[in-house]
Image (tube, protein in one colour):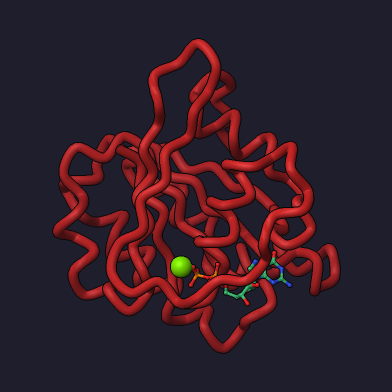
Length: 169
Ligand SMILES: Nc1nc2c(ncn2[C@@H]2O[C@H](COP(=O)(O)OP(=O)(O)O)[C@@H](O)[C@H]2O)c(=O)[nH]1
Ligand SMILES: [Mg+2]
């Protein structure tokens, strides 16, 4: 089981929908806030189906109930929402410190790159003190810049999910 988590409205539902439908540009862009848990299954040729569980941002206090046995975790942040950043960083540091996730591979997915300048992702990582996190966290951390809306940057993320091309950074 993979987890897809992050604060509310960062684009998790749209991102998962996009990843399920990479070759279909005309999917619906409308989402409703996820209350509870949303599970999607990725069918990859010649691989077992991959289940991804989205946990809504409003569930942050109980995210930890879903950490057992998680091999990979996508942490989705909104690069266009600076007011959310402090909270997003705090929640992220908390999950990195959870012993249940010690050996989990973690991807920081910077979404909504379509509505900011290209340097915003670097500024976000600086604000999160990502270099320090990378040094001290026991997990392998990887970063991705995507736009779920524009369908940008999704292939490398999909490769990471499938595990065919580990991309340490
Ligand atoms: N501009 C832009 N908007 C996005 C992107 N991804 C999601 N959104 C919008 O952000 C809002 C929240 O998306 P949703 O997937 O429901 O977020 P969730 O709460 O993390 O599941 C919706 O209005 C989406 O259309 C993106 O890459 N770019
Ligand atoms: Mg959602």
